Length: 501
Image (cartoon, rainbow, N blue to C red):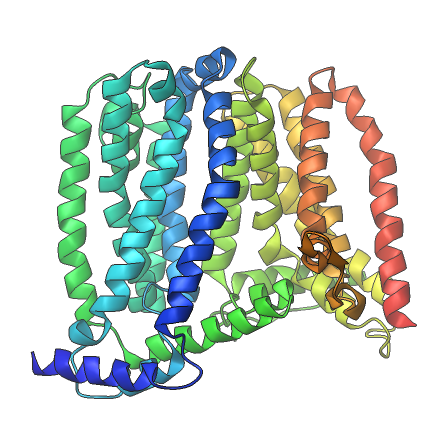
């Protein structure tokens, strides 16, 4: 009780600071959130529910391969929670609070239970809401209501271990995190290969899906046991929280918030990259030609952040599984699967394009290795091309699809590498986009700012949709991607030229 009183007094002092959000600010933020949700969120959710309740969507969601996809997505959520905990854990207070409480003699459980409770409850509610939206089509049509409700309850139980894994990513050491990552990857492999009645946590969640294994008691019991174990693990992990970890995450998140608030989204995302600690003594015997030496250096650089590279490879393989599932769907919202797999591929290429960023930073500076920025960018192409083309296509073949689907996945991977190269040369946001744009409906300057920030995502969505729909007419129709690749190359060269001038 004494520790809790000291924590309350510290927070009262922090709230008294002029820079802290007041209760009036919080009430206004809540009012704006409810207003935006009512005006924007409700129509969007209604549109999604009606689309999922369509007969063709119901047929696609009831396909036997959808339950397997749910198992893979569930395992990926746990892998992603561990990776997220390494860069932004659930306990991320204000830096002032992090230093004051973390460096005191107050126990970690008393100091951080409030932050942990808020973050964990928010994560559980978000995952449960997503599960509810996913089965909303069954609920709207009155089909398999019992199984749909059981899936929602199972998703809530599944979210509790997700919160524990998220906390573990922040608490444990790098070696322990690597061991946990290996275990979660093995769980992912089991979700891909084992039958759904194996009752692994991910397969148990898939067993509750309408059209899964049909049983509910055993999967719910398995997920409930995992939730109880996770609650015990959360209490033990909280006692092991170190002040350095809290301070590191607090300062990183504050920097990311400031950069994102000024419109520098790429700078904010750069803060999520972990510092390389492994492979520092790994020697690179540069070979000739230069492109081979650059490839060697890029591979060693990826190996020095093994968790980041492993998550990227898993995400690329999952994108390949998504393309295989897309090929099996004959009806329903196929565009959702196509755009989702494309965006996942785009995000997974991030750890392998550090060379693109390095080449873009040299524009307008003295040439490195006697090569211009454009040549350096071209020299760094092999690694992301190999990963973006080979990993998804191999995953497509392992999932049982044909060579045409593998060719589609490889083509989209190559195109998204070009989009990544184009995005890496963006540079800082032009000051003109931050100028006010008065309209009768208010200031419209945010439209241009968000369009500038999201141009690569728009390219990804459009290319993923067009290429995937074109592949249904035959792999030869993918040849139209060549002029698009030439256009992206010209746009990238133009950006580098403007940066060098």
